[in-house]
Image (cartoon, rainbow, N blue to C red):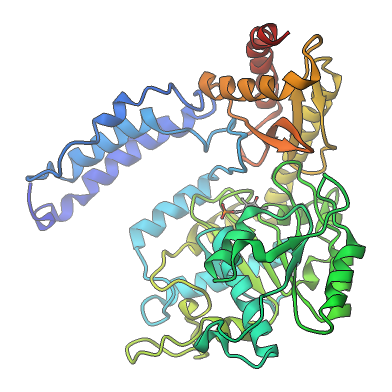
Length: 479
Ligand SMILES: *Cc1c(COP(=O)(O)O)cnc(C)c1O
């Protein structure tokens, strides 16, 4: 097979291969191990030199799907508790396929009014869902990290202007270091965004009362006061990855208001706390932020890549990104919205389509039910851990993350880190469930994040069964 023009209308055949595999794959996800084995011999089949003569679309896709179904990490299934990983709702998955089918150049009205309109609708619905005021500007991004880059680029354009510098045009030279303050709950992606923007990851200073990361408001305020009226950025966090903890946003918003600081909120998955009256206190005050980061590929259960950035005053998006300065691209601020003037990307996927599809399919009510089911499942796991004599719950279950460790009788405290490290490794090798390890308050811990629409109480009960299958042999070695 040579030039793809030879395939012409036969493109449908390759798509049918995917379609035929999709049903059994998705139906099997609930039963499948998260990962079959560490043996990646099967991946070798995808290697070899660049084919001189192609095999054609149908055969190429047959091989990709055949190997893919066997070798993929089934992280979109119900028992991938590691990191914070959502699945894909049926409507979001289909919406994502439709995105590829239509293959829109999204970001320029002239190239796709469809993509631009759907992005506006999707951003509007997301603001409603999270209780963000409708006047906020926004843009879809590939991830929360890129949403940080977007929001913090707006923040520093504001900051530089206060120093009389147009940073978008002239860069950072002549400016002082950017003051960025947060609590101990801050996620490394905030530092990554500052690093990418040229401020250095260590420019961020944290103020914590203790080793839980809880914000020290007095120390943070003292740091703001010491700036003597110079502008600063305060970063609030809702939904910390190890325990689900949140900063008190109303207090941070008051502080920012008193000292004229920009408030940036990282609510990558925590924004979804707004959906349930049981947890909405955690996002109270988010509506007072100047910029907000959230993710679609986590708790919204939209396929990768999907993030959102919301900006209180959309004018900063124009100032931070704006005009491309070339005659073949439209200028900023035209009546017809060009999303590639409102964020860092140029060409971009129409990632609004799966968001639109899933919100249209399930609505606020469907998402509230899903979030509350996850709250119940996480609380159930927390209660089971609390009752188990050989497990120790290390933080209250406030949201969808459960932080605990294995502590069987007879293993000395100083060997528990090693035991939990080994148990975490054994868990991944076993493959029935995936949960990760981390450090919390100086201890090695296991943690599980419950954000997949498929996850039920049975799945977290299996997590404990697997831990109890694997744990005793490891503990016997360390007694
Ligand atoms: C996952 C996460 C991020 C980073 O999100 P990406 O989409 O992976 O870039 C940032 N903040 C928090 C709190 C997160 O949980």
